[in-house]
Amino acid sequence: RKEVEQDPGPFNVPEGATVAFNCTYSNSASQSFFWYRQDCRKEPKLLMSVYSSGNEDGRFTAQLNRASQYISLLIRDSKLSDSATYLCVVDMSNNAGNMLTFGGGTRLMVKP
Amino acid sequence: EPEVTQTPSHQVTQMGQEVILRCVPISNHLYFYWYRQILGQKVEFLVSFYNNEISEKSEIFDDQFSVERPDGSNFTLKIRSTKLEDSAMYFCASQRRQGFGIEQYFGPGTRLTVT
Image 1 (cartoon, rainbow over the protein chains, first blue to last red):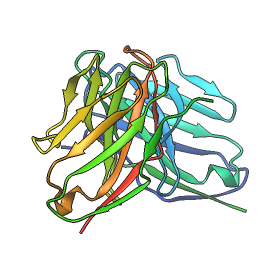
Image 2 (cartoon, each protein chain N blue to C red; image 1 turned 60 degrees about the vertical axis):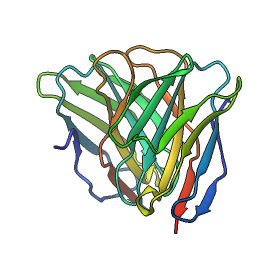
Image 3 (cartoon, helix red, strand yellow; image 1 turned 90 degrees about the vertical axis):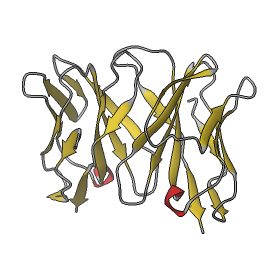
Image 4 (cartoon, rainbow over the protein chains, first blue to last red; image 1 turned 120 degrees about the horizontal axis):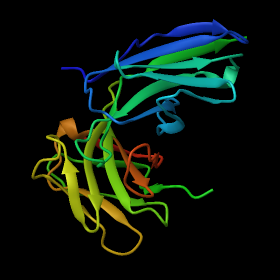
């Protein structure tokens, strides 16, 4: 039973493109949502938290749709350095215990 | 910027041996976690730790695993008798406080290879 699902990609885009990733999660009681990025054989690095009202951080915009149990990440004006795997992460603890459940990741390759 | 550190970066061990993976969380953080990632697979939760005790653990975290905070800075994961399938990247994470939307920060990981 998959709990956080993502399209594995890869998404191959040219520099400057806009790209969007989606993620669905199974636990409707989940309260906390995050996007992390992971470079090859490195640790997950927090990109941004995802809030109910949606939030933006520079070129990155995250949206949450609780009714559809769906999270998205939009990257505008892609840079070569954005090439990485993007991990959708959901806290599925029953309390606020913060046990993170990771999706399998979506691989992005930005080409010159 | 404070960061989580882990040692060693790579550990090679023989099946059946005990290993201890070490982590130094961010200094003012109170909640500590271990995750693992088998090559090519997703990151999986192992255990969370607060106030010197385990708060949650997954089904992966069986009797072969234990965690400890032996002093004020280190947080360790021990695997008593390693198996081939324990080969993975082990990540430590720390969190300032509990609650919704509170971020976890990950260390660089220890790559464990069991031969």
